[in-house]
Amino acid sequence: MVYFKNDGGQIIVTCSLFNEDNVQIIDSAMNWKIALQKASEPLLKANIITPKYVASMIESIKKNGPYMVLTDYFALMHARPGDGVNKMGMSLLVSRNPIDLEGKPVKIFLVMAAIDNTSHLQSLQKVISIFMDTESYKTILSANKSAIVSMFKKVKG
Image (tube, rainbow, N blue to C red; front, side, top):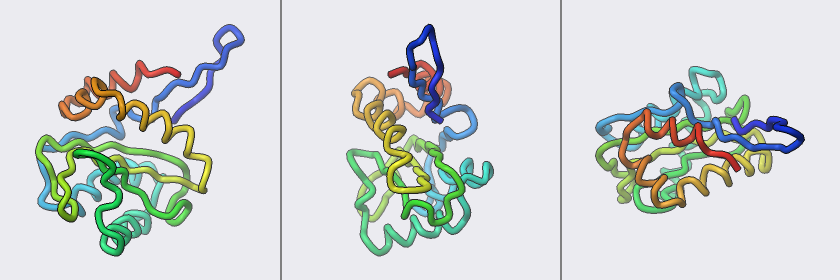
């Protein structure tokens, strides 16, 4: 989670959304549904989401196409806020090889679970700014878990 700590009267936002528990690296997956299920496992295990949320994400892609693929190799996987979500959370799956998501090659599956339409926006903005940084994006695409976790531990804003 993004949390606030008082450091001599200043508020510091630290990004600890991604850690050893919710960052996964794989070589590949047979299809995007299997990759999405794998990407969702940390959130399911932590009871942040329910299987209903995973099913909703799959149905959304089937109905609307690959709109969740935001840029080369990156998909922001989500469903309707609150529907199968117990609390806000994110998980990250990086594949060393591209996985076809309805005609779009994806290596990064970022699963976002939101409880409502607004509470996740600050966390999402922080994460997207990291993904927009070329060097950070290369670090994520490198599929080196310790480098990815270390990078997110260092992020402050």
